[in-house]
Image (tube, rainbow, N blue to C red; front, top):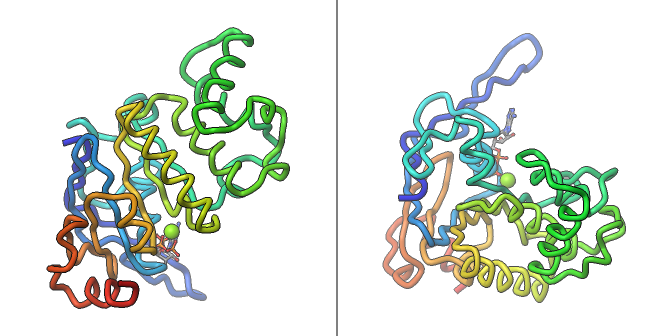
Length: 248
Ligand SMILES: Nc1ncnc2c1ncn2[C@@H]1O[C@H](COP(=O)(O)OP(=O)(O)OP(=O)(O)O)[C@@H](O)[C@H]1O
Ligand SMILES: [Mg+2]
């Protein structure tokens, strides 16, 4: 298994006036993701999907439970950064507005190795071409890009360290439908070329069915059902059925 998530729990404490209130955001979440798989997670807004993404990517630690990538704990820094990348929904908050496209993509590369400037330029140009963008965009700032271009820059950045797994947290949700399809098709091509696996988080079951082989249904902080996409019609859980009936 590439990713093993076992019994993950997370609670946030919030201050309400002088009182402190506990909120359970993840309740005993367990699942596996096989190498080469595109696994989807669908759930309501506020159900804890992004919290799970942050825990799997090692940005936050769970209160209890474990996350193993290739059998090793995620909380060994070196291991995590090289093997796992994340692409967020909103590129305007996930990239630094004062950094050019070149700086955005080269940053994760320069954290690991020193590359002479010309070689770094070649690497960044190569990554831009891989995501269907012209290397001429290298000097632009995020606000000078379209939403689709900016999301491709985020994908190029995610690819830079040759990860085994990319977490896509609502990564195409802000784009219009034709651009979503283009970006999803690009991700599928990159998957074959770079031997990638994806954990695809969305609130849109249709996009998920287009892109993934398997789906986890997430409701009230827990996984309530799972199925392969081709057997979706036989899922029994009421939340999954309601979601499917609303679109198919
Ligand atoms: N750092 C934090 N501190 C306190 N509460 C938090 C924190 N991060 C998230 N929460 C709370 O945890 C809950 C789950 O948030 P999360 O962002 O994981 O939901 P989500 O399923 O990704 O929602 P959406 O579909 O809207 O992106 C929310 O109620 C949110 O307010
Ligand atoms: Mg979210």
